[in-house]
Each structure stands twice: as C-alpha cells, then as structure tokens.
Amino acid sequence: MKARVHIRLKPGVLDPQGKAIGNALTGLGFPGIGEVRQGKLIELELAETDPARAREQVEAMCRQLLANPVIETFAIELA
Image 1 (cartoon, rainbow, N blue to C red):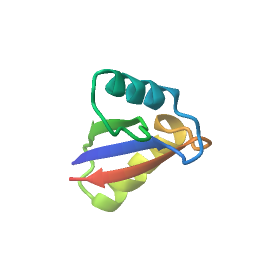
Image 2 (cartoon, rainbow, N blue to C red; image 1 turned 135 degrees about the vertical axis):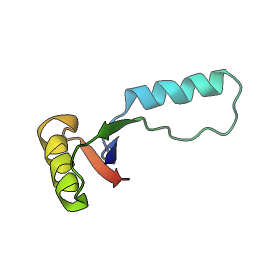
Image 3 (tube, rainbow, N blue to C red; image 1 turned 45 degrees about the horizontal axis):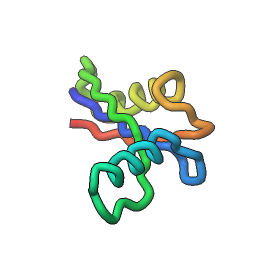
C-alpha cells in the first residue's frame, strides 16, 4: 500500500522559505503572486494491506518523526 503525507505549516507560523519563493517568482516577472506557503510531500511504500492499520502506522510516523506538531499539520492519503 502506498501513502502520501502532506505536511504544512500551521496558519500564523512564519514561512521564510515561502516568502523567498514568492519574492523570487515576482522577481522573475510572474505578476499577482500573493502569499506563498511551502510544505513537504512524503511518499511511503508500506507492507501493510489493511487501510485502517496503514493509516494508524503513518499517523504514528507523523507524530513521532515526520511532522512537528507544534508548528505543522499533516494529511494522509492512502492508495
């Protein structure tokens, strides 16, 4: 089973990388760039075949290592 984890900064958390990307896009001539927020996408190949167990495993991975719960949120997709 495959899992995708989308990790984003929580609203209100400063995103200097997103700001730098926005400034660079504007500097390259792309008009109308508003706020830019950068996140992470992590793709996992899991041996687990039960979707409920797979989700539990990935949630545990996120809480223990992949995401910082103080400043980040995460969303999981299973396929």
